[in-house]
Structure formats: C-alpha cells, structure tokens
Length: 233
Image: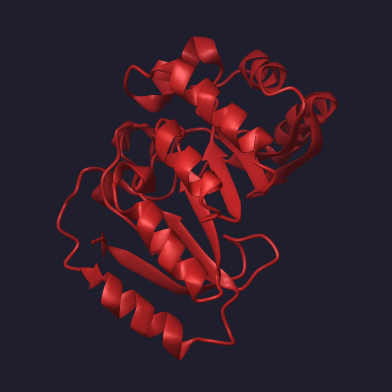
C-alpha cells in the first residue's frame, strides 16, 4: 500500500488539458542538484502521511469535478504497488498521469500494457554524455533508452521534458538531446527556478537562461519533435 507525502487538491497545469489533483510519493534513485522536492527525495519527515484509503475517499468526494490524477515524487515508479494503485484509480473512471525519470522501464511497461496510465511525462536530465552530472548519480542509460522506446510506442499521450540550467546545459547539450529523441511527439524545455529550496543549495540564486535564450533553444529543437514549447517564462 502506498503512503503519499503530499497532495495538491486541484491543478490545471500538471495534467495538460485536464482538471486533476497531484499526489506526491517519497524516495528517488536520482540526486539531481536542481531538484526542488528534496524532502521527498531524501525521505525527510514532512509530517504528512496520506493513505490510499484517504486518497480514494478524497477522489470520491471530488467525483464529477476531477478528470484525473497526477502521480509524481520523488520517483513514483520506485514503489512496487504504484501500478496497482493506478489501476484502482482507472477503475473509478479517472485518468492517470505519471511523472518518471525513466529508470524503471519494467514498471513503465506494465503500466502501459495493463492500460493503467493515460499520460506519461518523462524527465530527460541532459545529453547522454552529461547525464550522470545532471542526475547526480551514475545512470544506466540502457534503461533510459528502453523507457523512451516504451513511451514512444505506447500509443498514449506523452511528453519528454528537460530543465535548462546554464551551469549544467550548454546549447550544444540541449540540441544533442533533440537529436537523441528525434521523432518524438512532444518536448518541453523548462525554465530553472533558483529561488526555491534545492537539493544542492549552491545552485540557489544562480544564473538562469533568459527568455530569449530559451526561445532560441526551442527553435533549434523544432526539427526533432512534432511539438516543442518552453515552460516557466
């Protein structure tokens, strides 16, 4: 059984085109220095514990108002029972969006094969050459590649997304990501927010790319995707 560490009761942003709630799960196998959910990643006590029963009671109360849920973290696919929880949500007639870093392709495949997910958002940390630096740990890129393949062949809605940070990503690095994901449907380049508590406190208050620079990067990425946009500007 899952125990959630936070809930955003209503969001019009997290699930594109839908009214949803967002559920936060603890634990992550990455240590991205720019992560703004450090308490969840490091499993620090937030003083909040929400059981599955409490979530389902909440969903029953919001029946007819919510289109679906978003499950994020942390890394939600670290939890063995996440797929089963998603299936239970689907049985209630709600849509499910899952955020993932793509390092658990077997769980991702199960979600797709069992029709337990309607939208997948996978975070791409950097180009293949700089992935470990951006993720904060050594990453098995074969698993990342496998997840990319599962998502692209799934037939469901999806997005790849990447947070652009001057100290971690050059323009060449960003374009390399486009070449890597060439032919994918949707890619979002996200503005970095240095004004919130981050896993690596040395990044707080650091330089960000300007709106103009992000739009230039977005233009350079357009040949590789059906849709490219910038978030957070």
